Image 1 (cartoon, helix red, strand yellow):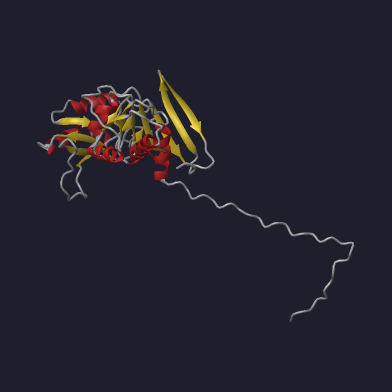
Image 2 (spheres, rainbow, N blue to C red):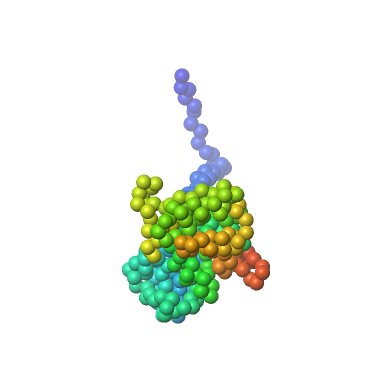
Amino acid sequence: MAVAYPHFSLSETQTAVSPPPPMVTPAASPPLTQDDLKKIAAYKAVEHVRSGMVLGLGTGSTAKHAVDRIAELMKQGKLNDIVGIATSMKTHEQAISLGIPLSDLDTHPVVDLAIDGADEVDPDLNLVKGRGGSLLREKMVESVTKKFIVIVDESKLVSHIGGSGLAMPVEVIPFCWNHSLSRLVALFADAGCVGKLRRCGGDGGEAYVSDNGNYIIDLYFERDFGDLNEASDKILRLPGIVEHGMFIGLASSVIVAGVNGVTVKTKKGSELVVDSFSYSDLRNGF
């Protein structure tokens, strides 16, 4: 039963107190996606580009952001006289569409700066690359650059090469590829190695063919296979092997974008220098 209460008016000596303003909670920014982190790392790397440079243009979803950013700065007049060397046909087509002048290693045998992604990065900045299929051209360009900046999100960090459990690619000639696969797996039997021919559209598809007309065998490891240089020598001594996806000692710096900030790991002599940068709103400017 409702009860009626008498109405009381404020007396002249009483002061009305205004209610406090309602609390306004700022809307939380949506969480950063993996692609956001890739873009942040790419943009940070492009800060090192200077007019007049010969640039190695990497391949893959992270490197694509760097190529886009370089083209954007060129259109704004902030970068001039840039010459790019593409590490794949896909990057070649992207650069052409964006108006980036291209050349090759025959004309420019020394590259000023290369920017590319990686599939794995170990604590010593050794890499696995080539899950996108461009390992040979990437290594040709990135082995002759004065500075090689690797751009990744934090999911690519591993304790040892092969530690992600994902593929370590090896490019082979198509002739007797199954024989090459068997020999590769035998080299790393102690590491629980399994090898598969890369195919288009899954296991039942046609063999994947690289830009160089070769096949790719993907190696998977259950355990650490040990010394990288020794493993590299074993692989490359096999007839029919073109190149592998381990990039040993090539990276000058690795830029790692994470949800809490950016970490830059740089080789200086025998030491590894680590700088960390936090940010309050990663989306600003992106």
